[in-house]
Picture 1 (cartoon, rainbow, N blue to C red):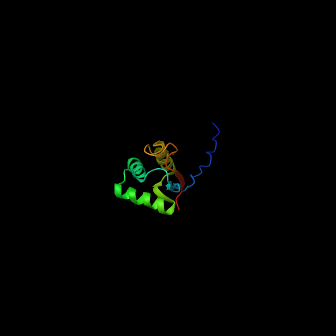
Picture 2: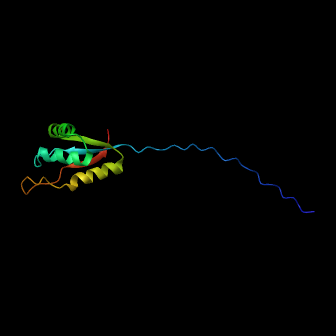
Picture 3: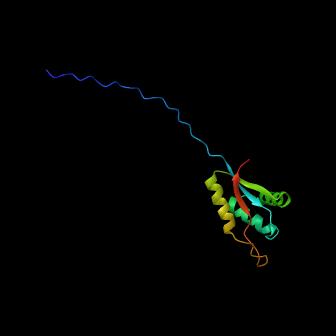
Length: 110
């Protein structure tokens, strides 16, 4: 007769609470500049975000009067992509040779 080996104690799985941590939102912030034309700013915003002309004009004027404006808010990776797309347009081709791309930063949304 074989020795019966005791069965190991079966420990029930601990209940673990899994929570999806949401990443905080980030803003694509457009900064005012006095080099690029207002038309160029509106064109870039339309192409990058697909906004209406009216919305782009509103955002451009807010950046012009307040110094900066959040033009888009969402996930950090997308915000970084949108900021890169804005700068990839380069300077306004209709301004003097000392032009520069639109000033844009990615910042935690308030």
